[in-house]
Length: 191
Image 1 (cartoon, rainbow, N blue to C red):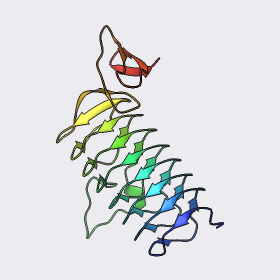
Image 2: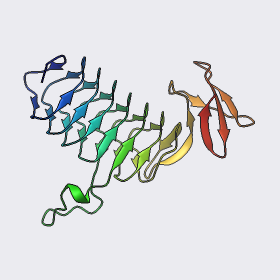
Image 3: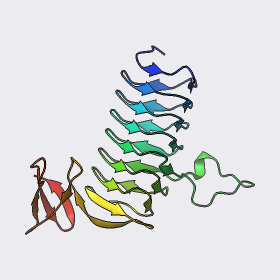
């Protein structure tokens, strides 16, 4: 593997891994066999990327995050410190299912997951959604949704820049970046 990325000397990368140009992997990380990491990503201290995990370009994965097999991050996903992913709904130490029993989890482009949030496997988090710190996601999340609480419930909508959106007559304009959105049948689209 041509090394056009930064790898801290305390971290370990297995064979058969792809890491994109400009990616930075900091202290005490482990990147396991079959992982595919895009360009210009950042992995904080103590990140574990399990077998066959896919990470898109520009992702930021903060300290103490484990991405288990079955998890896929599209481009520009933010994973806050110590957020949690799962891949088995009924784990047993004595009766492991192996990768054939894992449930897939997809985090779509631009989504952000707050510190200590949990994403229960088998769900999709939509584009540019924002999952609040400590929330527990137990169902699919729409694009641009703001999800808070345990279990997480939708509390509104957010802009690509992360600001809350306030709809009037099914349209909204971000008060900070001025992007425009429309709400059609409880789905939000950028105009």
